[in-house]
Length: 337
Image (cartoon, rainbow, N blue to C red; front, side, top):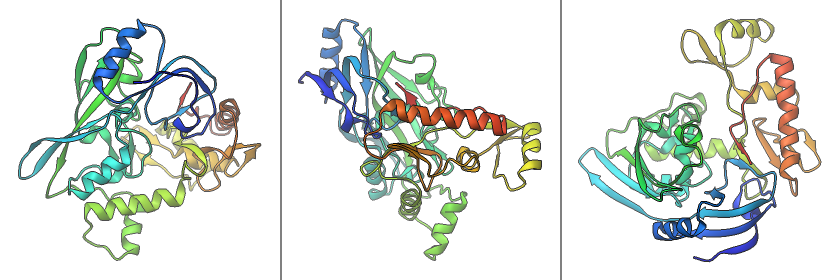
């Protein structure tokens, strides 16, 4: 393990923001992690995984640990199910493709989500009707202060919509090192309920899809809507889809009869944040190198050399307008650092 000083983090965050870490170390094993936690002596730390769900707005005057622990192991297997343990430093999409290759079902709808496996439980990542919590058995994490390992069950994680215990009760206390999933080997439960997936399969004439078919459909959909971070800096969906009560939605629907929505229960309606942003005229708008993507209004982008604060200013413009126009206060999905 090597400590680097005044390290640019531009290539370690998908927004491509050029901020500097006072100290930086890539951690490739749990023993390295234990050593650095012991030596750091409870000084401030910043844990960096795939850098896909954050907006860096300032230099980090502390030690940044880049969790790059690799490895995938099958730990239990039966005729119908398989339990797979994957280390935190594995690329999420690469892990999903490993599952597809081995005919392990359950994660195909989560194809092409950027980031590393270790950060997936923090956010309870989800897409197209599937969330991480649907297949995760447990995750292992190291307590930063005590250096002791703790296993969090699915229930322990208190998963919610893009939320978990790691964003609330124990925020900043643990470093996730391993995640274990229970996946199907046959008789897969396929989720094609989202219209975009149904349409993509229909266009190919597929009536009895495999998990590979669904993965390929999701990949094609995401590529058509979302910019590639290697080409244009971004962090995917910047805002959460807001949930409003029935009365508020009924009022909005009178003014906007075509407003899209997803009914959560009898009293709560989810509205696509991207639609709200597009209706407010932000889609494709640009201020210098910071802006809103031309194909997906939910995605803020760094066209070249925007600073984190310039991206943040764009998000504030959107928050203000959506509140005034729809009386809805959007929440950021991206962590602002």
